[in-house]
Image 1 (cartoon, rainbow, N blue to C red):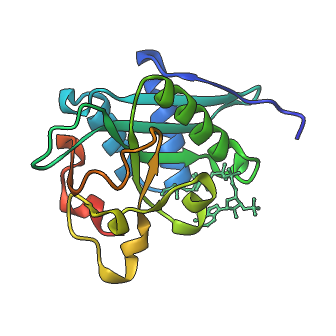
Image 2 (image 1 turned 30 degrees about the vertical axis):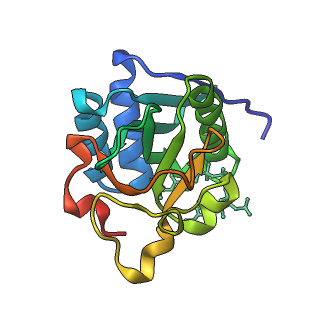
Length: 182
Ligand SMILES: CC(C)(COP(=O)(O)OP(=O)(O)OC[C@H]1O[C@@H](n2cnc3c(N)ncnc32)[C@H](O)[C@@H]1OP(=O)(O)O)[C@@H](O)C(=O)NCCC(=O)NCCS
């Protein structure tokens, strides 16, 4: 494309652009409202919010929020990736993949152990996510049996995946059953 995107952490002044990216990518307001709520939610910390910009303007955004395991005191942070969006006119250029890769580098350095996502298995398996249920890690709400593989995990720290089990608890803003029906 000849257009190089730049990825950086968001600040408060990016909020309008971030919400626009989600409304445009998803064609509805629900994900933008979720992003607003998560960015204002103390229980979502530690969080990571990255925006992708091109010369043409803001084109992508990814958000991670805190998670923990029921009945387990784990000394490493777990995060949930939700949502990820790239505006329709910039899709298919690798921007979604770059947002994931940049976030993973950042989170690995920060000592995050596991990252979870509920999403398209064919897309996220390209980015080293694998079904979480086989490791005994359940989603905050039951996932319909036909979509079990959509609840996925990626290990950023060796030795953690397989050594912990339980149900993942998400931030308050994400803790609504309607966000968990894939
Ligand atoms: C999903 C999304 C973030 C991908 O961003 P992107 O910048 O277009 O992704 P990339 O360029 O890194 O990757 C594109 C590849 O992923 C594939 N892909 C995109 N959406 C996919 C999906 N739902 N299932 C499987 N593969 C998908 C594309 O076909 C393309 O494949 P190719 O490389 O073989 O041509 C973007 O399409 C989007 O914002 N969609 C609407 C919102 C959404 O669904 N968000 C994800 C919620 S889980």
